[in-house]
Image (cartoon, rainbow, N blue to C red):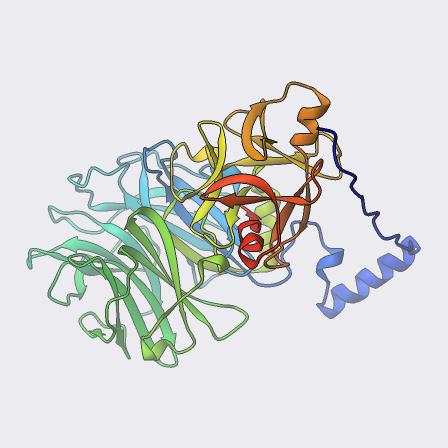
Length: 472
């Protein structure tokens, strides 16, 4: 069919300022500490930011990698993987792999990275040591070594560290089986992360307990979140000291399916605290809860529209960083060369191709690259976009009989037009994105029974079906 008429909008004209005036304005704003996002590089943070460390696993193992991965965020909710979601450093000692990384900013402002010494899921491996790196900027990693925490015939899982001002030492907490016969949270003390004092029981509620995460010194109280390993739920304990044995449980169980690996982190711009949990049913899905009163121990689920975890991420750690540190990390590692598209009304589902048909499916899945797209200049109009598959680079999403398929670009005008779309403000939410067909400009990409097609949009449901988040 011949394309229906469509209109193109022209960008608004902009007046040019004299270069010396621009420089003077920038210097003034920099001195005032108020340099705006408009004058920063495109990747720049507008204020405080966050870094996440993690390893990766996917359902069939295609995305599994047991090195340290990093992602960054400007709000602590939407995450951008660095280094194309490849590891930034990989262990060479012990098992040659890591799980459960943790990033600590030390008292001197530099970083310590620790992790479980385990490659894969052979839980019978019993490593008494953990991986340790030092870093000034999370771009270079030095003094890599194994740190032995104990001599028991058991493991050292999910290490985390904190500063204990009363001792003038760092505490390293981790999960191990002691004489009780079940996992407890142990603690070793260190000043240099080269040697450790030897294990003490830090917390034992009387049942199998792993994955401890601390929030220290919050209005004079310390909070420990952990996994009840028997029930697959997260619980919180608290104490006015950091002494071993001083914590008592004060919350009910928090979970979404089987949940582990709690991360407690405070927003740098509000009084909101977030609790992240990593599920193992289904595998590797992060869920988030929030509260403005950590002492209450009650958490409200965060709408999944508000957050997006890094692709294939497992058992993460979140550390606040500065805007400058964010900029330096992005400049060093780069953002992904691909995007993922999340559904607005089914935010657990992402746009992918399966058997060369466009659809939305629940995350996670393999091949995970079926959900990765290069949004390239439109084949029929560079002002639009076309969706090039990462899995099949010669193929693009195009409509045929109004359904979206992944087809090889045959170089024809018809194919180029069928595979070109214009980005617009989201029809259900203007902060999201909708995609209007180039050659059927009254139709938009939407999902129907989870299959993608182009349709005219009229109802509220239609608008929700046609709205997506373009992220990573």
